[in-house]
Each structure stands twice: as C-alpha cells, then as structure tokens.
Amino acid sequence: MPPKAYFERMVLPTYEEFLADNTNVRRAMLACMATHHLMDAIGMEASRKATDVYKELETQCPALNTVKAVCLVAKHIVPTQSGFKKYTIDHVKRGRGAAFSDGTYFNDGTTFADSPETIVLSPSQTDISDVSKALDAAVDYFRGKLDL
Image (cartoon, rainbow, N blue to C red):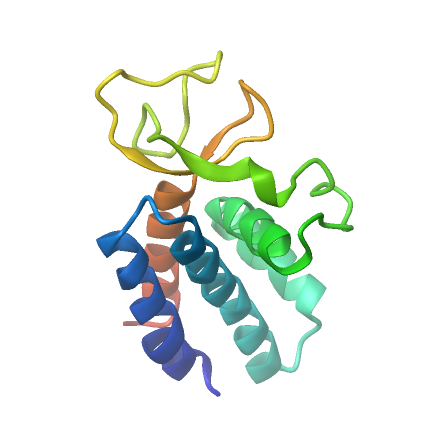
C-alpha cells in the first residue's frame, strides 16, 4: 500500500480513535503501531532498507522514538533492540500529560497538577514521555512529509 493511502486508511483513523479515548492503553499502542509501520511503507516505496529509513525519519522527527518504543513493547512485550531494552509493556500506562508542549516533563519527571491524564511511557520516575504528544508530533510530521 502506498504511504499516503496507508496514512489515510490506517494511521489517521487509529490516531483519531486514540484521541477520542486518550487514556486507553490499547488504543495508544495501536496508534503507535500504525504510525511506526508507516515508516516501513515509506521505505518500501523508496526501495530502501527499513533501518536506514527509521534512522532518517527519527532524526527529522524525534517523537518517532517514543512511538517506536511503544510499538516495540506492544509487539514484543519486552523489546530486544538495543536502546529499547529498558522498556516493558508495563511502562505504557495512564499518567499526567507533559508539562510542556514538546512532550517533556520537568527534570524530576513531574508535571503540572492540572495536566490532563493521558498515556505515558515511563520506565522510571524521571524518564517519562507523553505518548499523546509524541503521536501528535508524528502525525503532523507525516502530514507534511506526505503533502496531506
């Protein structure tokens, strides 16, 4: 399936379902899986190795690293890829949204008391990523990349 079609048929509807229920871990995982696999479609269309495509796109859109981590734990429960071994499926959970619009938290891993609840990737008290913000950034990035 061409990347634009995959984005429109798989990524966007799955992302929108998550947005409608953004404290649902299953929907967050499915949205991350669909978004991550869009990189495979981009690589296949360009006849490039997936690892090269991942590296390039993750450099251009760092939020894709969070999306990838959630995707890997959803698929493998405990990822085997180096750099992602610290994550398990238990680290994808409900938590308070990021303190800042770029998806980051204060240095001690805290956020504002009135930050809305969402899904976070949190292997420790200070290493935390807002999955909602990562998906927002990734979807916006792909909209631009695919001229949508």
